[in-house]
Image (cartoon, rainbow, N blue to C red):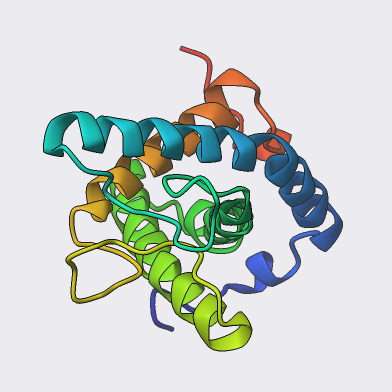
Length: 169
């Protein structure tokens, strides 16, 4: 069996728990990550003089409420990886962060691409990058987003099931 294959115990995990926690996380975590994104874009502008990414179809230009869909998708990816792969396999924290950051980074590109292909409207554009919908420096933003997701879901508001509660020190 390879490392990605689900064990029999993993397959018996309750979908109701998964769906309940996912809905809660989308409700609370996605808006927080969206606000974090606004701060990251402002920080990028403060350092580089221009916004790192823009929203051409938004009247605001540097942010869009439509990008909340991408944040809901990223929470979906983070929780799904955790619930069905990382926790059952006991994947170490920094490995989780690395894998999830790359998956979400690729998901950002896929989300931007699909938005244009399916609706003809851009969710986000990174000016001056060959990838258009994401940039390589964005991987560092994703690392911070994944770390914050982990801290929020396990240590701050604890919206994870009891099985995943951190051990008391």
